[in-house]
Length: 355
Ligand code: AGP
Image (cartoon, rainbow, N blue to C red; front, side):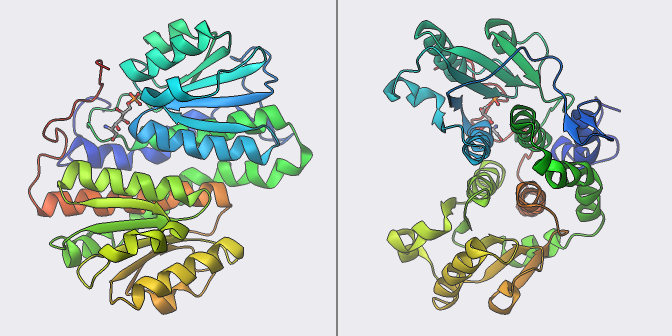
């Protein structure tokens, strides 16, 4: 079952549908059901003063998410595009450099990790491939356990990276207050399944797949989701797509917004971030852009949207992952309608082994 397409037209669609199972595998044995504790036995003692992430592409988006989670538990953290790591402030003794890499073979990420080690930092590989170069060369390895991914576009491995980074911060935080968050992680596989069983992503793709360009916006943990939504869209549909932190739209990209540029806005909860993103949604609505809200229904964003991609109610960190599933499906269906070679997009390779 892992190797064939199991009746799906493409590996990408199969892998999108494998996410509930991948997430269960990732959680298995790592969450103590009774104590509400996260146990990552494979890791040695980690107590970093600061954290630097290095990664590329989709894995960089996971790193942005991971850095926010670390900051939320009081550990200063920053994500770097691996090929730009040379410009970072050098880590010092008790700093941890985390390489997020599905394959564990991406040359830019390996090179940044080697540089980090050379500068004296401890290194950790968060990877899917057991025995990969990153796993072998780093001081520690944490596996995302997604199973093999064949499609060039990363899907289930992104979901598994997010949940693994979430587990890592919960493990380091070890707080009683995290019980709700841990419960949210346990609900995640069935919430992803609920989306897969009842999504209108194909209808959205049908309506908009011949637009001029596609924009994706989100704040906080939804910022990496906006970036990932756009990367996935351009990678497999060959259409122009860009992701922005919602607040940045008015500092330039808004000039590109027209009635022929759909804007996907990720808005969950009803707090300050949702309120501000709804303000940005109103700005694009006023320029007649079609708005597709990816939302859990907690706010009134629907009032300003042409369409809604619904996700189940959940915690902020799991909402990001759920919203991403809807965006993966829109990209997939748009690319299928445009008859693109989805599993092997032109000019791209699954693993990029040159710098
Ligand atoms: C994802 O859809 C891309 N194919 C690409 O951005 C990928 O995530 C990147 O090349 C990093 O790969 P890695 O996770 O194997 O290091």
